[in-house]
Every structure is written in structure tokens, then in C-alpha cells.
Length: 166
Image (cartoon, rainbow, N blue to C red):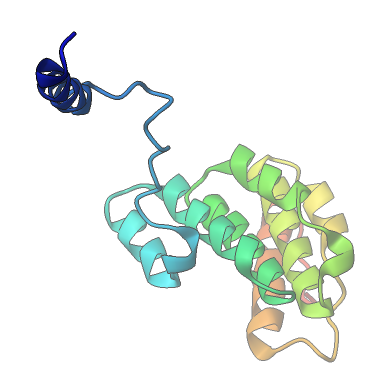
């Protein structure tokens, strides 16, 4: 090829090469729509508004990944509680089973136990639910005590027993 044609041929090759479609290996993976670092608890409400309970629980799980203890455990318990509230029993059970009990504070441990008892009650295992209930403890907040007593009353009702000393 003559020198006078070499320059236009090279330019044409460069231009045509720029017009090719990239292959899948050339395309970087798509970023998630909302990176975990940009998620917040407000996103839980957004997912719930559109009826996506699993997405809402997923937000809590993603928040847990970047949180330090004890906040990490709070998020994981929030995910399980949300799933249980919306009758996603199997998923709630799975979330609870994957929580490291050794990392829980005493209050978180009580919350975990109450969630396990609620799951047992929903599963028709009232006797198991009753055996899971923690004793009332002095460090329990008023809300925790009320939650414990309410659950105990529901269990006794399910068992057909009446205990005035709840």
C-alpha cells in the first residue's frame, strides 16, 4: 500500500473500530439501583408502600451488613420481625436462624426469644411457644414487659388455659 493511502486507511480502521458493539465481557456489571451505603430505614417504608415486604426486609439485611454491633443485630431482628408481621413465616424463621446469638445484647436476646415464640404460636405450637418465653426480668422496659405479657396471654388462650397470675 502506498504511503498516501496508509493514513486514510488507518483513520478509517480507527473510526470503524469505534463503531463496534462491545461484547458482554467489555461491559461492566450493572450497579445496584441503590447501593447499600445509600439505603436508609426510610427505604423500608417505600418498599412497604408498594407491597414488597421481602424488599423491605432486604433493606434491613443490607443495612446490617455495614452496621457495627449491636446495631447490626437490631437490623437483623427488625427484618425477621417485619417478615413475621406480614406472615412470611418461613423467611422470618430463616432470618432468626442466621442471627449469631453470641452477638446479642440481653435485650436483643429477649427480642429474639419473643420472635421465636411468636413463630411457634403461628405454627400452632403453643406449648413450644410458652416454653420459649423468657421470665420477666428487671432490666426489661415497660414495652418489653407488655409485649411479653400480651404474648403469654395469647399463648394461654390458645392452650385453653386461664392463668390470672400471667
